[in-house]
Length: 192
Image (cartoon, rainbow, N blue to C red; front, side, top):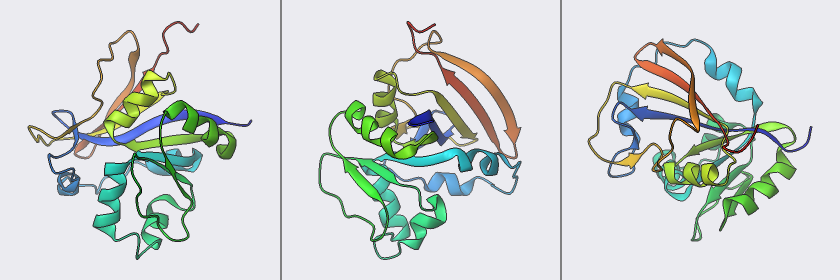
């Protein structure tokens, strides 16, 4: 089956709904114990054919892991999956990694993604505004959260949009160590 099967926003968030602190850092996440592994990642990740992220997320990863000089860090996280980075400016590329700098409307970029992903899922890594754009275009299918017992008080919100329960429905919630995994399906209004 050609195209994308599902567009999924899989991310960690704090108890007060932030994905990054006011400095766009994810360091808060590494304070949360991750020793509990229920195998969810190993079941979910193989269906991902590519990923999309905003420029802030990409730049944070480049800086934190030195990916321009160490492309193996990208592969450690994402394998050989292609990535699309949504930006309005030029950003450094990671040598030997299939990354497209996407500029403009997510619908236009999504059309190019579907040609490449061949029936696999698209992972929206972050940030929240990019995910909101996918939602606004009626392309977002699912939100998978790993909520941690952390509060930041301010920072980058999970999804800076008003989206009501007419469009969102809880599918599952489960405790995994010190995180709660919440799976939410997105209903596209006007569709049967």
